[in-house]
Image (cartoon, rainbow, N blue to C red; front, side, top):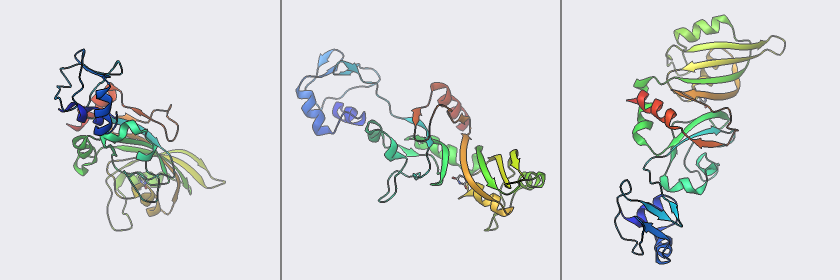
Length: 241
Ligand code: URA
């Protein structure tokens, strides 16, 4: 791989900027100053340094974000702020994108990556990857709703959902509000909201807390993100193959 391409990919600037940097003699390959930006390197076998810092080349990036309300799950938009807009510039060269969508007013776990294969596996309808949500619902959620959800719900367009697991966490009879946990095994448009509409209730707050083997890190405030740990990545990949 060309050295300037690699460094640009790692977020050290445009190819032109890197060419300039290299002329200053700040880039070393296996301890040798390299000034020619067109040189080819083997990132896994050679030691690359810039400003005395070693460059850890990697093809893929995996981020866990606690998506805040008010931003959309897209890579770019002319009007709305996207989850990618929340990331520091260093991630942009990797061309990361969100894995699936959370609604603008939904918060919680969102995986952001540039690994197309893993994304495909996680989103494939055939894989039935579980996704768990906590929701505040206007209305009293009942045992009957649990039975209905367990059998599958008919949505407004006639679609029959797969069986899902509904747990009632809290019910306030006075204000007619419920807090629930719901695990679904597919990802239709506005699915959770539409499932509750089917039983004449309204989701007023929705947060995703897990997706497959990944659980939202409680240390992440809305808008925060972190890289997946090796363990999380192994679990994800193990599940998807
Ligand atoms: N279901 C919804 O209704 N909205 C989401 O954002 C995710 C699941």
